[in-house]
Image (cartoon, rainbow, N blue to C red; front, top):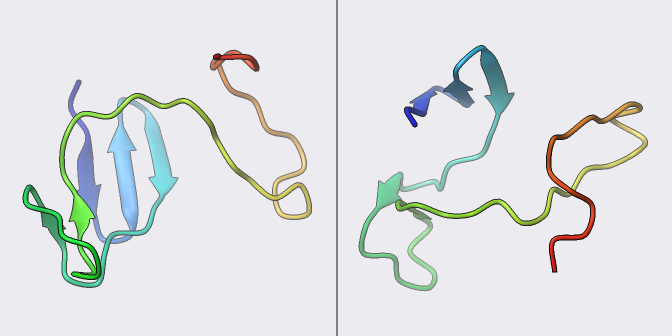
Length: 66
């Protein structure tokens, strides 16, 4: 899986997703309060969004993952 970060956007396949990266960039050695985003491989378990900003949200993730 190749994910590319450019500016404030994450690119994956045909998707362009707005994202937030830590003020001090990305690191493998994350420490609390360093204002950095941890790098690594993570599973997506939940997606949070605001219904007042995104009216119709579709996802291939199942509703109950636990």
